[in-house]
Image 1: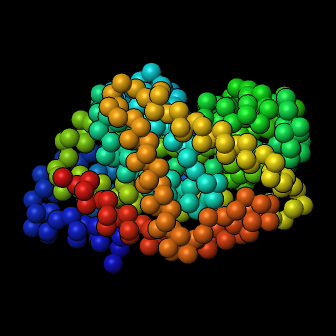
Image 2: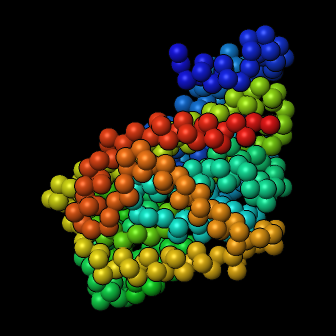
Image 3: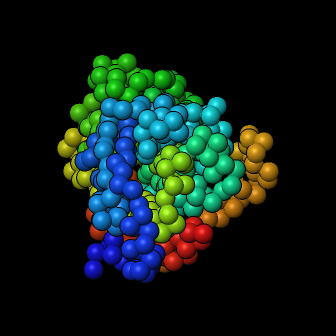
Length: 394
């Protein structure tokens, strides 16, 4: 039985399905993704999401996809989806702190991570997912822009990919690091580095020419996206914040016009898409890990002298979040505490499945990469589905 059929069985009876489906008007929805194409991690997950909806509606809902900013860019997706230029789009809330103050503030919780890829992606992603779907100040904030949150995910921890070896604070002193956002730039500064703002499309050439020395990004960029292995062969795995709550949204008017049966199906499909993205991160990080483990192009630097500095700074960043909360968050310290508790809860679930948090030594890091291709998050997905998803359908 297909995944679509299993979801459909839990949503509606055949008789009810026929009634709402008969009344459903055919439509084509536009999806805008500035981050990549249908072969990228987000793209593959969303294409599968679309296909499940098309199948569930017997072909009445179809999709047109606009990849790599061909319809909307990163800075105009929120307004574009709200205005109906696109029906679905990807939002990075920290790009729009004026429009999304709560979402941008939540972004700071990306500093509350371990550096262990499985746990940061799945536990961090689960905490982000349930929060963006249930935290009222955030859902209301998106609704004020006429969009409905579908799902959100979290990336692996960001590290440093450098064109020069860096293992000590002395090595890091004065080095220029591309770091876009305070959650990363403050860690770079704590290490003695100078944050710089360089456009994404200019990063490869900037590293190649020595315009800057390091890029604050996931190691998957060695094998995906910019493919930085030739211009930044020094892997400095100091743990920096993850990109928290990359959020997919839908035009609220479109969502409100859907019958409840379809809304409930899409809600479950949203969680499945998030799971697909978690699994996708395992795959692309594993590919980067193969390059790192080979050691012939990429050299892994020992960060034992740098990691405590970054860890202390990240903890201080999280500790100060309550003081910077938007007014719409009534008890920010309680939120921060609860969020950390949820990360811990989902981390414990992964440990119970046999995934111990990886240490941050060069040997342990390489070993952890080697195991990513064998990670199976299906039990974790089922736990989230049984505990959280039913409460989202009301």
